[in-house]
Amino acid sequence: MLDEAQFRLYCDETLEALSKALARPSEELGFDVDLGNGTLKIEFEESGRRFVVSPQTPVRQLWVSAHARSFKLDWDPERKTFTLPGGETLAALIARQISDEIGAPVNL
Image (cartoon, rainbow, N blue to C red):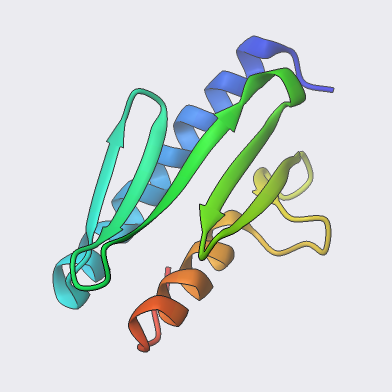
């Protein structure tokens, strides 16, 4: 298991990279991305929905709340990213959830 300092570093780096990757699609497709206080929020003005990506330090996971579901991702040291148990990466999960929300493909 990761120690707390490593986990926080990986979370910060991952959320910053995801926020940057979402910058262009958010402008083109009309949703907002906000990274603050260690949490990433993706908001859809048209539907009023919000996705939240937040670190859960006690269990060393990133949790994603989207479409009334909760996804729990663990750090994969070989791939150097957070993944679901089936192997889907955080970026792929977020792209899929946004695509489902707006009805258009999103590539990250």
